[in-house]
Image (cartoon, rainbow, N blue to C red; front, side, top):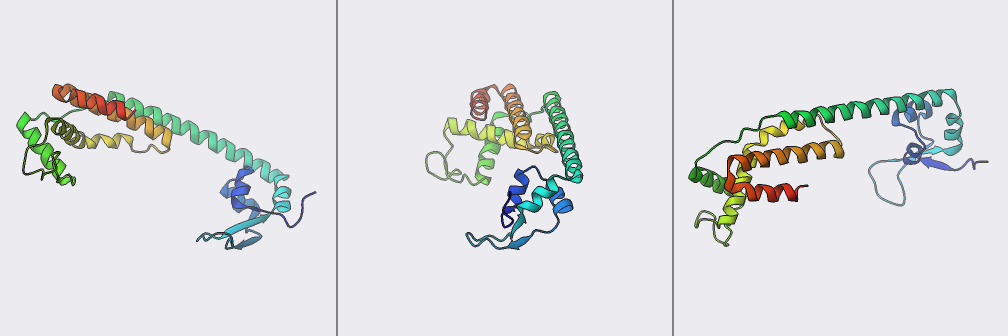
Length: 200
């Protein structure tokens, strides 16, 4: 037998398999609502009598809403997986066009890009405009500049939500971009491979 003064929070109701719409439609207003005296929070605490929650859980309306919620969840998962597969296919198929610049122009743009990003101090500690950067730093800056120049390809990720799907697609896109930069500028290939390995 359940104690009639036992309450369950909204989080606790959700753990029992309720969705927010089920709570709104089947339980309605909370039995107790107010501030949690144990911690400061802007959101009010909503408490539902456990006996009332259990009573509703035994109704046909709850069973029907629960089945509908599960069906929607499965359908949403199927849609998300289809969308993820379509985006991964589009990323694999998209031709990556890297701007081809003469060496001195690429170096100039890379240094300027680095300066604009706030890297005002050069690798040796001086002002980036005072002395030429070290060779390794310049290679990194060139890859960063080209990667920025290819940022328009990020739009291929539009519509992907959730850590797993977007993470996989983002890693694939970055790998393809670095591979394209390495193919267009062989002296930058080592730095591109390093970035691919770091971002795995």
